[in-house]
Image (tube, rainbow, N blue to C red; front, side, top):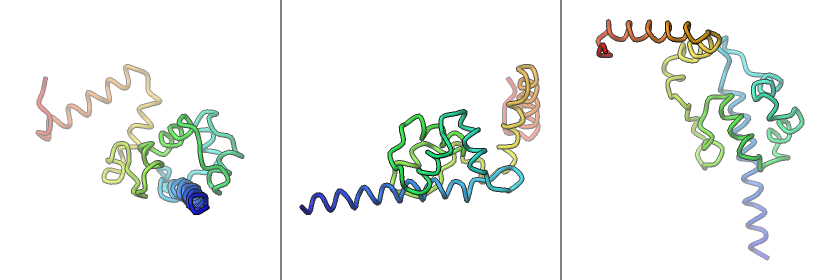
Length: 140
């Protein structure tokens, strides 16, 4: 009987842990203008992987065992490693770690995504040029 109680408590902790971690992403990962993402923006940003109801269930702890594709979609949207949801740590590890120290990195990446291939190559060449001038990159 003790095993059943321990398992139940462990399951409740996992529910709370997932909900807390997901809500923390909503609180701490911000749009470039500093405002919070809405649930609608997250749903749209995961391109149909999440529904409004399922996201609500995850955030309230009513659902606690999402599939890997859902975890990956949420992690990709917020720019964190999917392992953030599985460990005991609450540390928000950014996929690039540059987000926290260099606030313009996300904006550059988002805007570059709207360019065609030639535009992206031009941006890369500009970055290479700047790094070369600052002595941080060797010319090819």
